[in-house]
Image (cartoon, rainbow, N blue to C red; front, side, top):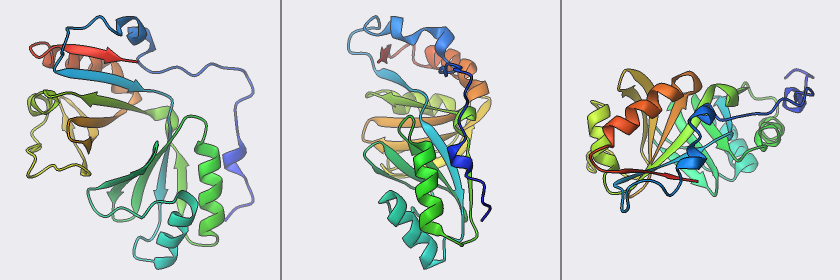
Length: 210
């Protein structure tokens, strides 16, 4: 492990971070959608996103992750969570960690300390990704319009997470509760996805939650 404490690096220019959907002014749309809307969207902006790579078959790696995060290493196509912190399987040796705003540097430090000399990689990708939450009784119908992946309850139970094609882009779909889903999208696709959602959810009613 290098001596560079990359988790301590922060901008000093005073630049203000904004959601990629800042221009859509979602805050002004709160409470203005159809009553009893079938789909509600929440922009979970500016969370910390970290990709973690390591040997998932090494007990020391799994133990280190648990020590640092209090989470068990998730198995294929699943996501685990504790409060506002979640850890998702991306591949045989890769996971996505999402933590509350401002906690990404502390989380990286804890992981590096807990994993010690193990061969690992931790990359902060917060600036390139965005998390959107969809909830409501018609979310599954919107997903069925948007992706060819089978989102039937028998194939996509709560706790499952997959990367797939969505409309004409790619993203990660996570089923976090019975009528609640999360989409991990690329920041550069945020505007496209927002326009798509408005159209796909029009017949069910779309509301915005703060």
